[in-house]
Length: 306
Image 1 (cartoon, rainbow, N blue to C red):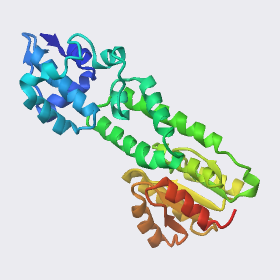
Image 2 (image 1 turned 30 degrees about the vertical axis):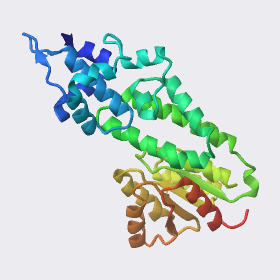
Image 3 (image 1 turned 90 degrees about the vertical axis):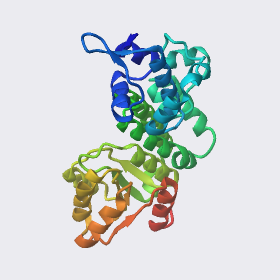
Image 4 (image 1 turned 135 degrees about the vertical axis):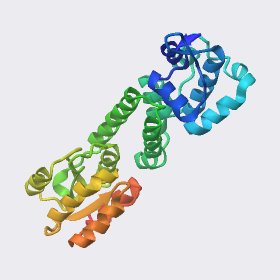
């Protein structure tokens, strides 16, 4: 019998994740010691390993739990490449295999695998194609996996930091002569810290030939005005990735409503901001949609020839 700490090591997921899987999905029902501590048997470990493998390959935790519990006797033969006394990520590395997606790499806390994934995907297409078709959907899956308790806080931070470094390098590499192009001011409203999408857009805008001043996340309203007065941009772009970002985004639209700049709104909740902007008289605000390639191209066309 194994304690929950030992089971966590053997399955390759955090202790908190094991507790969440048992509480939410009833995937296993470990016994208890005399002192009340959870004790996991060999069958429990096999089921949890199967669930972890399915989740890492893209299944939802709910579906993975049902499939893992139903597999029963087939589990050990299906997972013979996972030694009973080793975490999955360690044995996978020794076998020369690598996680197939960002969630699996984050679960494994494997920075080298994340780097390989980014290298492989960005080698297969243009920056815009890779971001729209692979990276942004993967980041959404990563966020959901964190919310479901599949990925630890450390795993989510590890993956996000790796992606941010890659996007920052691409942004720097796309720098142009800002004196000859329309100027774009972009960043996130106060309190908003989900910056990977807006950073990817800023890079795509540079690649379209626009000069971009990227202000980053969580920018107070007064700092937006100070930056606008300093740079006199032709357009301002903000993103609204969560519902809590709608109100501070509307504050930005409101203060810019009487100015000359176009105001592009991106992110999942852009329509909520645009509806509010219409009531506030912010007629210069317009939607950018959900594709960074289309958004950057649209903005370039709105700003006229370079």
